[in-house]
Image (tube, rainbow, N blue to C red; front, side, top):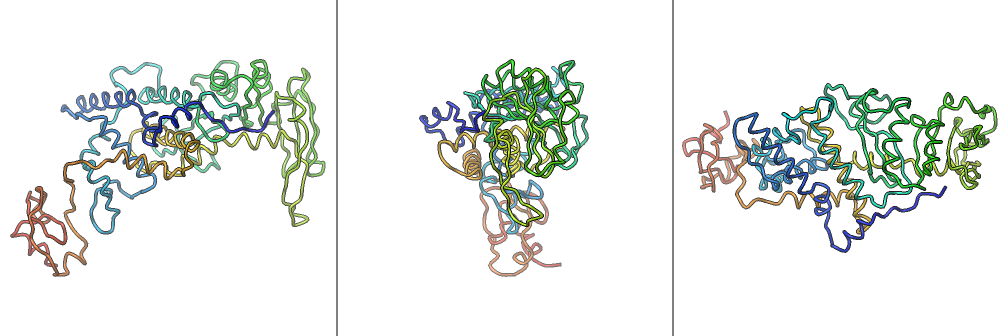
Length: 467
């Protein structure tokens, strides 16, 4: 077994030759096909629900996605504050001059991805299924040739509403939410994913849930000769044998009750750093025991000499109060380097996760795909230009939120009190468009030059007089 090598998909060279920008890469994932789908179904739902045309365009949908992404690194307590022009808010002209608050809320309220009248009888996530199918395909295509080192683990997307798919996992950074099975490269590139819909949903008979997940996700995705890493939820001896027959390396921690057929010693009674190697009766699977802070049990179907040899590692000794060097099996070293791909993906996704919330059960699933596309695009783009994730994300947002040629219609009705009542330099000037009066709330063009609040002449004194 080899240590993980840098994975460079062929699409990276194509993007470099074409000089694609981060926004172009984002639109590679959110391409015209999927945006046409969202446009069609959003317009359809709005017509059925409200009885009038929405006429949303693809450009407007890209602006909505840009506002969602902006909330990941510029969060506000309420999203309407993005459109506020008061001094104590962020006063983001990039949003205010691109789309009005009312238009944004109207589009988000009606955003749909499927025709509700064509609900399949046996698909419990039909509301988001077209996006799942699309992104599983484009993520896999973008990772081609597929990584030779990969890992499968669970990832959580926060959700605090009520739904049958919601999970609670004690001790996790995200305890409540939807659980995804993810197949990632060791760099954190998401290649394949699957939503956990319950223990009775789509798993093969005669297999544990872990065996079924790894078989379904990896056997049809990863290339032969590759090396995979899984944790003790998935690892069983039959699974390792099945992957050995398919010429796919698989290594994982394994629970004690899953290796009862192999006589193992009590490694905890030996000194720290001690290791022992066992083989199951057919000599296809090697099981390694190592005494670290606790006993470590590893199983692999790649029983070559390099994997089963010993190396060194550094550990802190409580007794000696210093760092000591301990012997460590190479299989543990390889596992630690190869298993962290899903955790990296989680870390990158969490960093600038969309902060907007919506009261529909499938919105967190949409958010998972949106943030996941950013992470995948950034991991691939930094093989061309070394940029941070924030720099990559900001460039996308600035392109998606192109200012409109029309003047902004949303303006504040009030101004901070220290400015409003200071009785200095308040003049009546003519505004460009009609707005609501800050006193009587009727439409009017004149405004206060300092407060930037629309006011009738007869309302001007009343507005600036403290009661």
